[in-house]
Image 1 (cartoon, rainbow, N blue to C red):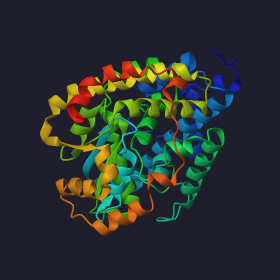
Image 2 (cartoon, rainbow, N blue to C red):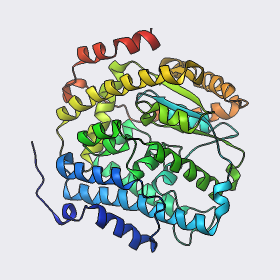
Image 3 (cartoon, one colour):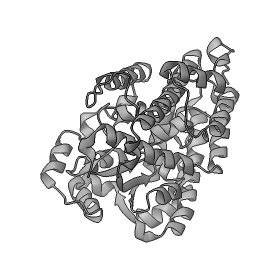
Image 4 (spheres, rainbow, N blue to C red):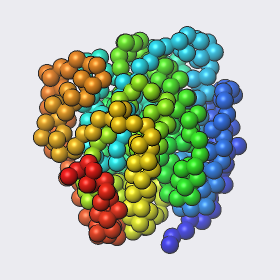
Length: 388
C-alpha cells in the first residue's frame, strides 16, 4: 500500500486553516449557522487517516472546501443585503434517484430541457454565489472556472470523458453543493474515506437539505427567468438517503432509474477509480472491493426507506426503456409532474446528446477485482423486483 509523506499542503489541511482561507478570499466572516463544522471535522480527520492524497490532491481538496465555504460567506452577505432572496418561491417537482450509472444523468438533462423546467447547472454547483463584481445575468467568470476544472480533470484522468459528460452549462447534481457542506455521498465519491462514509450513514443530514432549499432560492434570485419554472434535482446520494429528499421536498415525484447491477457496479467502480486517480494513490482493487459492497449497502438502505416513504411517491424508469424511447419515457414523467410534454423540445435535446457522441467506456470488472457472482447475489432481490 502506497503512503504519502507529510507535506506543507497536508499540514495546512485543517478546519481552522480552511475556514480562515475562505474568510480571506471572501473578505467576509459570517458563515451563518455553523452546523456543518461537525461533519467538516470528521471529514478532515478521515482525509488525514485514510484518503492517501498526493500533495496535489491536498491542494485540490483544499480548493474544493475553500470555494464552498466562500460561496456560503458570499450568500450570507447577499441575503443580508437582499432579504427578499428568502421570499423566492421554489417548486421542486421531481427528484431523480437510483444507483449511479443507470442513465440518470441523460434523463435528468432531458427532463430539464423541457419547457417550464429548470435545474442546477454544473458551474453553479461549483460556485453557487456570484463572484465579486459579477454583472447580474453574466456569470462568465464562474463558467470559466468550471471549464478550467474540467480541463484539469481530463488532463489527469482522460478516461473521464468516456464515463461522465462534463459541461459547465449542463444540469448536474445537487450532491456537488451538499458536499461543500460535508454531507452527501460526494465526500466518499471524491475521497477514499470509508470511515467517514460509515459515520455519515448515522448522521442527521437534514440541515444540509434545509440549506439546499435556501441555495435554490438564491440561484433563482440570481436568474429571475427561472421564476415559475419547476426544478428537477438528481443525485445518487438520494438513494441511500432517500428519506432526506422525500421530507425536504414533500411534493416532489421520486423518479427511480434502474439498470442491471452487473453493468452498474463495474461501471461505477471504474468511475470512482478515475476520480480517485485525480488526487490520491488508491489501488484499483481496493476501490473495487469498497464500492462493490458500498453500492449493495446503498440499495439495502433505500429498500427500507422506500417502504416507509410509500409507493405513491415513486415512478420507476428502466434504463432499457430510456434507450429505446427516451422522449416517451420523459413525457411519462413530465405528465406525472404536471408539466405539459413538448415532444419537439425533447427530441431536439436528444439529437445533440446521444451516448454515441462520447468515447466507449471500458470497465472490465477483472481490472478492479470485482466478483460478478457476488454482485449478482447481492442484488438478486433488486433485479427480481425492478428488472424482471
